[in-house]
Length: 253
Image (cartoon, rainbow, N blue to C red; front, side):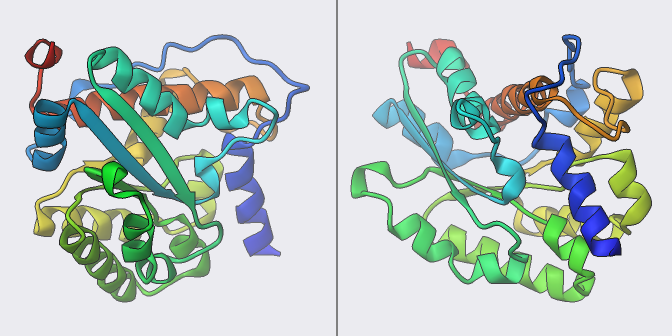
């Protein structure tokens, strides 16, 4: 019963329902959450030399949105649109492989296949691995979680792609039901060890909740709000990637 309640709390943050609506939100993000000392060198090289950027999102259920326009409104699509705005002369393509209800260990075992199945002219310069929620729900041992992350990151780097880790989504209800700190801390340690960026979705969404941009505590979240959360995540992620690439749009015009 407890696990089912947690899953429902997670689902309402992004799933939404078309029958409800919310007021517009600004969803600004503090600068320190959108900068990183890690560099996305393959992203930079692909943009500069090929005028092309292919990104693979390896996600979970919260990478998706329901509804007829769900694919276009989900954060991978919004990321693509935002990056095209930042780099108008670059062919940006974002694709997603979604592994719902899979732990990091289960996903890590298929990461090489996810990269290799892309056509030769569309191999990802960057793979965004969104993970951690299912591990937290299932209570996976943090040491095992770290081993899975290490293995997955190593696999992706050997496949020739930059790697960016995205951590859990935030909801006050989720935080009250799950011990998320060990997983958040582990992800931070792993990214520091491998010298790769961590997109701190958890802290970003908590900031939006704290300043009142989104009511993430409510029992029911509107579809309109879910779409805005995805749009805000996509735009914030594009800023983060642009910063990590160390490329200014003027450089590729």
